[in-house]
Image (tube, rainbow, N blue to C red; front, top):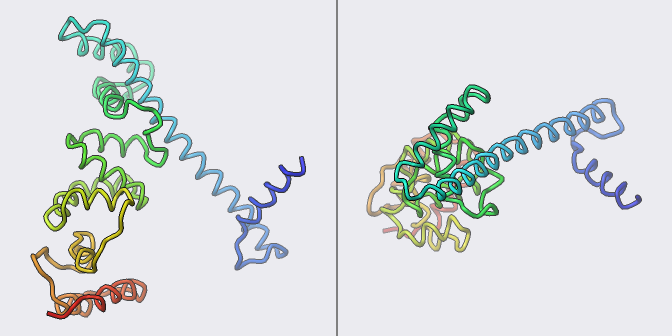
Length: 241
């Protein structure tokens, strides 16, 4: 019992806003707000993941049921259409033919339950399972997790062909190794060629970059002090050609 109380006390302490002492009325209210906000955030993540697991389990059952009729080439299509006809009127558009087809594809791409990421929601997985290339899919999956991308940001990066642009300036294995956190960029030039950095600086992709190009981009493009400080170390590490 004492251990449980101690853990609660630790959690409570972590929620405190250091700018507002707990022994003031505003500090107390701030702590209560933090507790509420954290609980709501956890609830949303829990709901998102429950939805993901629901579609994974549906996909698993559809896939398993299909195997019983594998001698019939059209059995899978029949099965999903019949299932959607029964489910959609009762549960809504989330169980349409298209959604059930996605569920089956989801399970086929992620057949091991433990590989389904709790950080990603169903909207993000719908975008990922639409990517046929396994390496490309893995890259966006890992980057979405590592960078905390929202569904909208993931969609933007896919539509901007970030993966393809990265491969133009780096080799595939190196790109995936960075996404997997197996290695860090080895040189400033490798970082500067990253399409996301180029986009940030307003530079077009070119085979080589000189210090003057980077300095000009910094001077001509408005940045906040924080952004400027994050870019200058890269500039200072570049060799002048």
